[in-house]
Image (spheres, rainbow over the protein chains, first blue to last red):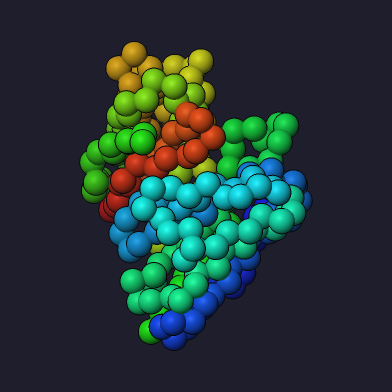
Length: 117
Length: 110
């Protein structure tokens, strides 16, 4: 299957700072990228969907000014958590889907564990 | 939005037994139903998927059945092994979005 990378794999930051997470599709063009958040022992919750070159569509209850998503190219999407607070500590996972033969399957990144002190 | 209910939340079996996890949904427009296995701290891994025009699909010890009329789909694992222990998520997609079930923690005891 296709490969999606995510960087960093973990990050610890102080409350009030901003953190950027990168998601890259390494061997295919990701026309659509998804960002999920997963709290311990819970399911993956979709935060937003972004199509290359377009503004992201956020799920209900997700603050778009706090979680900035950029999908500037077909291989890169970034999630910036602005003014992070301890309640933002979570496992953030990106997912990408390409065009054509991969019309259905989404490929997941390895996740980024964010800890806000 | 779309809601997916998954049962049971925890399932403990003995090695060699079968395990069945069931999901129900409400949106009849859903057309793609994947199942994921997630180990602690890792990404979800697709283990099997089924599309709405198929009722059953099998891949070695894993099978998925879909009943579109009743709006439920199930994961069947036969001859379970300790390495099958993980959290399993069902998911579905209607229009573009992939929505996940609440997860089932499977424990396979040797």
